[in-house]
View 1 (tube, helix red, strand yellow):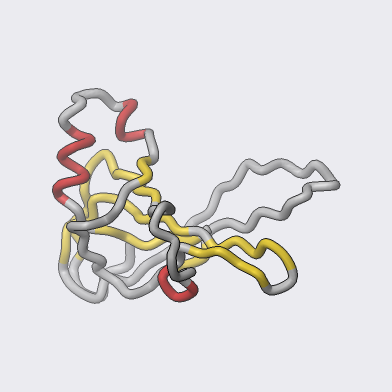
View 2 (cartoon, rainbow, N blue to C red):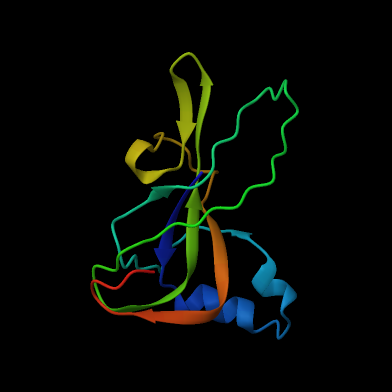
Length: 124
């Protein structure tokens, strides 16, 4: 899985309009029509292996740093996946390895409870 910061007042306000915290703790599968990306960086977050013969936990926690390339207000994160199906055969919605024709698979949006203002060169 991969993440990048995203600026999207529309998506953030759609979540905020529910007026409860639960909706800010929900991930949304969305087509990011009106989004801005304050960095070109898309960073790997988690890797999952299947089958999981060792039955290791799929609980994950990761700290990732991004450097803002422009001043912006970050409303959340866009998440993507790249799935190696078999011996070099893959499907991906990660922009650098995007599989053409994946029109029914969309990124996931993780909203922040409070948007974060970042300046050019600042670490998020």
